[in-house]
Image 1 (cartoon, helix red, strand yellow):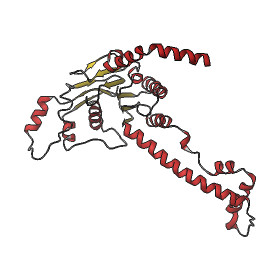
Image 2 (cartoon, rainbow, N blue to C red):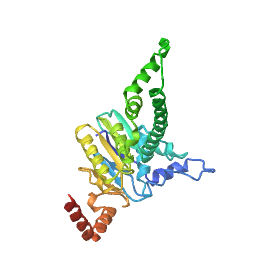
Image 3 (cartoon, rainbow, N blue to C red):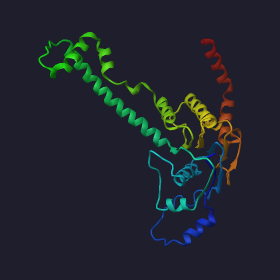
Image 4 (cartoon, rainbow, N blue to C red):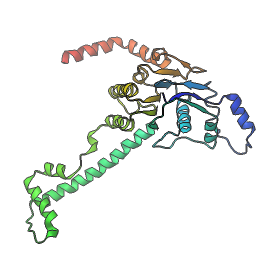
Length: 294
């Protein structure tokens, strides 16, 4: 337990702050009045703590405030205002006795930027592959003679082209193409690369870009990281797969003030349940067909 509690300013503290300010042209006081309006005054943490609620409930704001107060590392910029630092100063983090090795926030923007970077790398590899095809044909059918040591590397490439097929020549002279991984695989890999032992990790809607199967794999990874590798997680999510994390403390931010609930009692999880119950017959029929094919 690296973080035990976190306290946000209430309406009275915010009001006192505004009284002491010389207000002129400011219209954006974010994140003031966001969490206090939602009744969120404090959070108590477990090894895995989840914030759940609809759009605009303040869960992403809460994560960004916590991350800023703890000095968490991040890869992408986030929504700030002129008053963000002032708001963070009014917050209080109650730390545990242990020290984390790393504190990091991972957002959907981080994962999306990572996938874009991979795509740019892939485009570069594809361009280089075309050049290697041309090089192979030129080397394989050329008549080359070694005239000096300066020609030695060209001689090796020439001999390689004559011994190999075009595909083997290209594979041995070019790095593997990362495009073989899907977006979901790349997104999952981003989490497994960034999350290390003995760290505090703040995850903002990690289910984005992940298929249901990948979400379940990420859930297993988070459970193992918390149980065996000394990690603590604070997560915002809508995903029923992530909400079902074993042992997680779940805050329902749709309630004012937010309350701790089991994941099965959350309103939008019940919406999923009602939807699948309405289509239970069709789903059961399709499940039978799939079993017959197997």
